[in-house]
Image 1: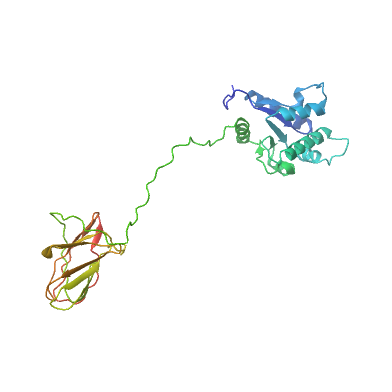
Image 2 (image 1 turned 90 degrees about the horizontal axis):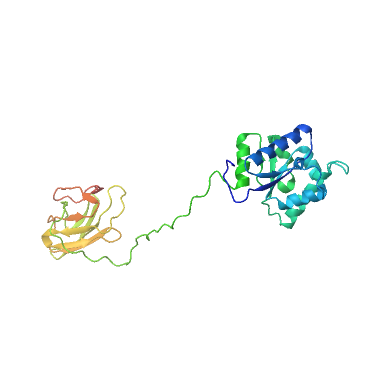
Length: 301
């Protein structure tokens, strides 16, 4: 049994070569013998004594019937294939070269049949021009022979895995509206961070940039933005609350919030903020400070 597996019909292979020397002829014969032992139906002229139809017609029929034609390339083979040996020598290879060239011409150069092989790396320079664009096999090593057998029996070393089902991927989330998001329902308990917010003037407290404007003692505007402590990017959908006034706001896409509260200027106001996946770091700035350095207030859990 072939070590390369079995199939309903073994691949049929015809070997085209030149009679360079007795040693070269024996080497080609040994290759055909091993291919046949390995389940590949190889055919060569040494197996025929005198075909009744004559050698030219026998060669043409073998070439037409074969699944693959192994072209054993040497300097002598290339010279005869190209018709440069003379009219009295190498007529067999000259004829086979004409058959190969005409077959490729009729197939518009599409080639799945003719396979160049060499017994030594230096012989690759003698591959005929019409076959230089196809895969060649160097039989100087056992690995080269295995690769040839894989080619002839359609057993690639890295076969394609079975095709699975198409991976279903959800769409990326995106903002559905340019308007501020609605206020969420009130909760009973809120994680807090105490921030000192002063009405009148501007503050920047640990990632909370507060700007307080408006006349006194009318309603004062408390507004700012919340940013990520590591990336310094704005954090949207942060729930910001003023517990003393029962007010809450959810930051928009740029991390901004805004409150209006009726308190005298300079009054300290407690502010809390919560967001899933983040925890605030409490900051207690001194009273009466006009400006403070920015602090990182949010840290990913």
